[in-house]
Each structure stands twice: as C-alpha cells, then as structure tokens.
Length: 353
Ligand code: SF4
Image (tube, rainbow, N blue to C red; front, side, top):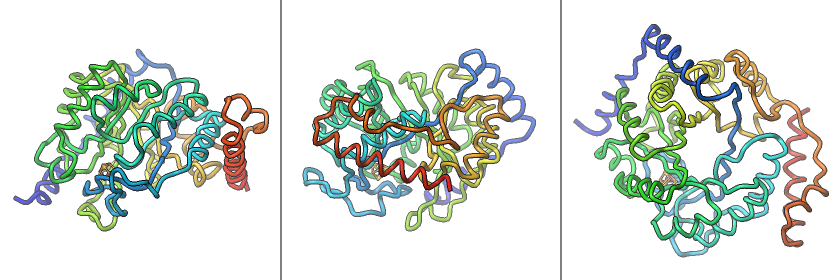
C-alpha cells in the first residue's frame, strides 16, 4: 500500500456518530466548566518571516516558497517595527499574542532574543515561540525572553511523519519537547487534522500530552495547498474536530485547547466551544475585522454561552503618540513603530466602512 493509499484509508475512519458526539460533548462541557470560566479569546499568531530553511514538509505553504539558506542573511523576513506594532495593536484590541512563528531556522537565536525582548515590553511578559525544534543550547539562551515553545507534530506515526516531513524527524520533535520539559518551559503542539491520522490517533496524542506535560494544544484543519501531495485531500468536518477536542478535554482537563478558525465552517464554531475549546487563532485581522464573519463569530460564542473578549466589530480609540512612549524603546525605533501602528490602525479603520 502506498502512503497516499494509507492516508486515504485512515481518512475513512473519520466518522463520528451524532449520539456518540452528543454524549462526549456533554461530558467534556462539564469538565470544561469545572476548570475554566466562560471566556473565550483570540490568540494572534504573529508571523516573522515567509521562508524556511527546511522547506520540504509536504503539506506546508512554505515548502512551495524559495528555501532559506541557513547562515545567509534572510531576505523574506519582517521588520522588527512591524512585528512590534502588530503586538501593540493586538493589545489595544483586546487580542492576545499567541506566539511568534514562521519558517524554521531563518532568524538567528540572537535576532529572536532581541525580538522577543522587545515584545516582552509590549505584552508585559515573556512570549511563546512556535517555529519547531530548537537545540537545548538554543533553548537555554532563549529562556531569557521566551516562556515556552512549540512545534507542529504532523503525525505520531513515525512512518507517516517521515513521508510528510522528510527533513524534520519525529524523534527530533519529541527530544525538543523533552528539553522544554526539563527546562520547565511551556509546551505547545499543533495537530493538523486531515494529514493522514486515524480517528483513534487522538489517544496517542493524549498519551503524549500527558508524557510531555503539554500546556497548549492547537488543532487545525488541513488546508490543502496547491502543488503539494495534499492538494486534493478533502479536509475533515467540524463534528470530527469537535470529537477530538472533547476527547482531549475529558482526558486532559486543564490543558489549553486552541482551534484555528475556518471561514467556511464558522457556523458550527459553537460546537467546538461546547466540546471544550478555550480560544482560537486564524482570525484574519485586516480581512475579518468588522465583517459578517466577525458578527457570526460573536453569535457563535453567545450560542455556546461564552463571553468573547476583545474587539471584533468596534475599533477603540488609541492615543498612539502617548502610548508609544510607555514602552521605553530607543527613539529611532519608537518612531518607526509609531508609523507602523498608524498604518495598521488605518487599515482597521477602513474595515469599518
Ligand atoms: S519546517 Fe515548518 S515552516 Fe518549514 S516547511 Fe516544515 S512545516 Fe513548513
């Protein structure tokens, strides 16, 4: 059997019966209410680059872009001021910075320390990074301004993982999680449903969450990318996603479960909250703000009896000139950040009309 045939066979296990789901969600909802309040919030993933030094994970958008040569000066990289300005906008909108992310091995460790130190001035605490595995020596250096790190675990099935990510072996990801655990740092894993997992792989994931004391799990749907072997693989449905969330919530009562929003399926978002999700990512700020999508998002949160934190339809006034002085940035950098905040604020203002 080829790997593609195996993926198709595994995808055929993704069936969730209505009664099975309802019983499970009821249980998960009880566990959620015992451990969390009624809030739900948005965690922005701030991208710092759009290239990767690995660039061959077969499902990933960055595998279709020019590869970065490690050690060379990166060109497809964002300016520090735009990243910091984005974090400041998030703060004023009531959105949290989930992590900084992008392709692996693009910025140097020193560049990441500089960036996360600047972000710490904005958020008031160390930030998370989600690029993939780092060596122990690098983790130790980054600890100064980073609270934790994450990686996508494409599959806990070693053979399938080697097919999906030929240059990013599963064992390096597990070793990375072990290092983070030894260093007592926060740990985030991302699971992409639809990448060839079996339904009952959720129990393998739960076992690993417990073993590595994972603090956050992010669940995403496969978004088939053109020019990848997954281009025609159908993504799974919301009931299947809810089933995964509920299984994890029941077995791991205090873990933070984050889900990536999917535009075409926002009408069923309440199901994911009822199953025990805490927060969400992939609200496309400059496209979704003040849109019908944002209205539906608010309605779905209400439907699940959850209070949505932050602004999705209203734009608060920001005194940018005063606010920018509170972060004690170096003057030249402060001016650059201020300009970027104004630019982003204008873009959000345009969404209102
Ligand atoms: S290492 Fe990460 S960013 Fe790079 S190709 Fe693989 S999944 Fe994409």
